[in-house]
Length: 252
Image 1 (cartoon, helix red, strand yellow):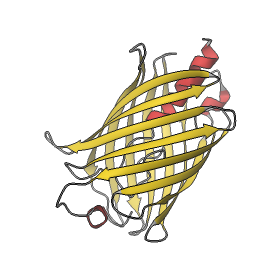
Image 2 (spheres, helix red, strand yellow):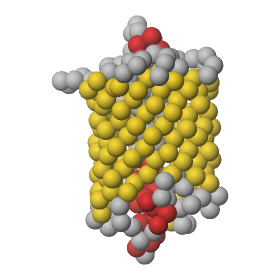
Image 3 (cartoon, one colour):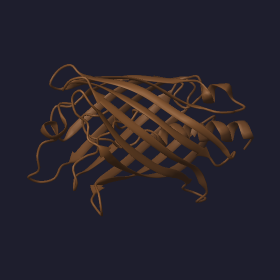
């Protein structure tokens, strides 16, 4: 496989591993910009989504996660990604750990951090490593701004990138949430679109505390200058007898 194809596939993997598990009512799942919240200790969820692009690129992702408390609350997730880029298929696993340092609240910033890496499932080759600082400012119980900054090491070409993202969430009815976000990576690359900004916007329907579904439109999601449509679902397993999430973290 040529360098350009490898770089394109790696860019897709880098974008997908950034779509990490986050707190319910957050820009999670197939969205790229993370919120500072994490779920309640003892809770778990399974996120999954399928994305297809106008250039025939495709990805299917499953992302189970749980929150444990070995010394502080930590959300552990393990994405499995099956992707087609430029006609080449790859299967990747991407473990990640996230913890919150400053809880979010209306009128103040919350702060967390996460890190992880990605590996080729067929060969075991390490493909990337990353670390991100998500910050969230709640404008109200139904609106918030998420800002991300981080680092990405693309091991296949031994290059380092700065990563960034900003997103806005608005829960405009009891069951519907709108999200818009821009994100990307800055650094040297032979392919200009790899470092061009990416964009996504979508609507989440969440009829109850357990289940939600997302419909998302994206542009240049993996650095290939194509249009993307994503359908995603989240199934949550809250702590039995625990406090409902909307009371613990606000309506978003």
